[in-house]
Image 1 (cartoon, rainbow, N blue to C red):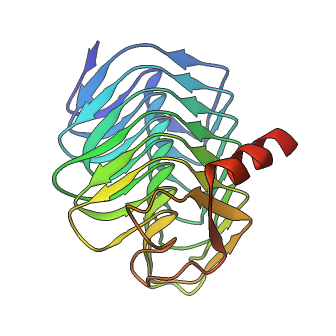
Image 2: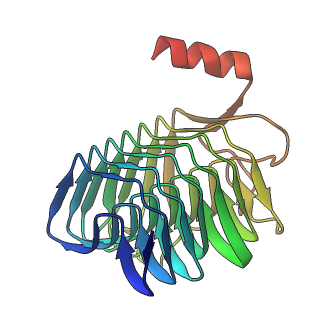
Image 3: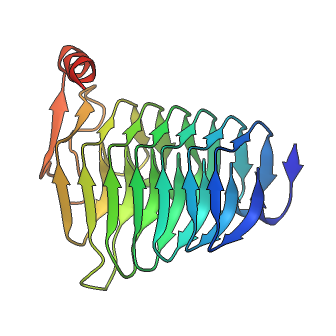
Length: 239
């Protein structure tokens, strides 16, 4: 077990312009903020071909299966989280929060259930929150686990918004199979809250009827499609 207040990770607390490749964490992680199965915080770093199997439980913000908070053109690729994750704000199966000049998240899978603790917000199957400057590219990534919280809850992204006109999110070829549970109306099968430009293509969710829309705040689908179990199985077999 790894226990710390802030900046706690299964491999490293902080990674600055670094590459972390083919690493696995099996340890339970407990902390307050900036916690990840691989790294707590990253600046301009790459996390590739890594696996987290250790449960993560935090009382604060920036909590993710791979990384708690990443900034400055991070690349997060070919990673898998199997573990349960709990936190208060910006909690995601792969990345808790992404900031500054965007990030590329590609070929990542979350199997673990993601829980927001009391009065939580920005809880997502892949990313808890993304925003600020630059585009976020989220491609070929899937959430299998259930996602539960109070506000801004999403199967892929909990929330995405920024005052910067270039702070877009592009979500392509992603899907969510998990249940979405929220104590507030701002919850979506793909994105919980989105108030800036998003481009969503070839993205879908398993239609279980608990949450009606792909995008919760605007209550529309806009590029995301509900599918039945049979349709999803056929998609998986063909891809």
